[in-house]
Length: 311
Image 1 (cartoon, rainbow, N blue to C red):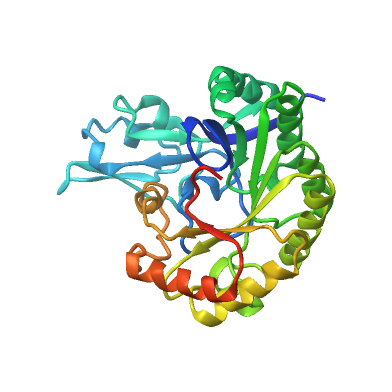
Image 2 (cartoon, rainbow, N blue to C red; image 1 turned 90 degrees about the vertical axis):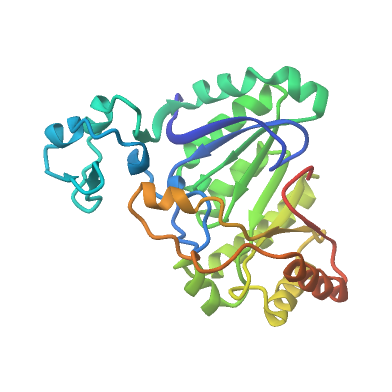
């Protein structure tokens, strides 16, 4: 069946999220609202407007075409003002913007189209051991599309990887794993209350899916990596790290823990879509922060790496 999905980017020549040089396909939509998320464009499932007022030349075309008066004029700054609450994402303003200050984030594609785009880089895959990674957003929000995309790449001999929060149906995740060579699963926090506070969702089903995924990957001889987005003052206490290490030890394998140090590179994107960045007051991790985390994990005696490169 020809499955369609909504993606917001296909990035070529990536050196993370799997071995070698990779092409990463990013799908839209995520059930979590992690305070530190760097992929703001992946949160909403449907296409949406992004607007950077610093690039506005003041032509006023967008004000004239908006059917719901969601755009007004700021004479003091010679730029249009976007009311994202009123906006219906009809894209009328995007079509008339002469400088591409307004952009449509997200497009509908067939799985075969996305696979064809990934196949363009096969020469780099062969020479580097790379392949295609499907990420998000959350891939479990579009299971049929992602599974078909993985299936096409997998049967074409392309190394495949997925990145997921494991927040979704186990049946969908297990089918994706069947067509993946490498599985990255995020683990934001072990404590249920803390996880709910940081992401907006309960983690009982997520942790259960991670347990099942680790067992399935061991059975099928697939690589699984548990990723931990480490955010200063939020989930990096010694207690939180010890609980994470205990959970890793429980898993079949046990799998490698990959620590992803917090950064704020994606902050600007939030303003462009009318949202507030949840960790704007938290600076990026310092060497001292990371040394402390390493020290705790070293004492716990588990296998871990730092950063998303060359996994």
